[in-house]
Length: 72
Image (cartoon, helix red, strand yellow):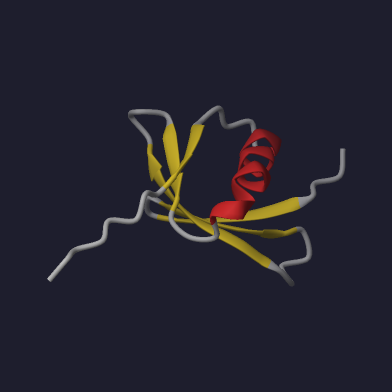
C-alpha cells in the first residue's frame, strides 16, 4: 500500500504533509493518554489528518481547536 501522507513527530506535535513533503497540511497536538489529537491550524484538513493517522495504524480521535477570543 502506497502512503499518501508523511507525518513527522516532535515531542507531542505532529506535522502532517503530503507524501512528497511538498504540501504542508496541518500541525497537530497529541494527547497520548486520551488517544486524541487536535488540529491547531487549517481546520479544513481534519479528514486528511484522520487518514494520515490511520495509515500509521494510530487510532486517535481527531478534533479541531476552538479559537478563544478575548474582548478587551
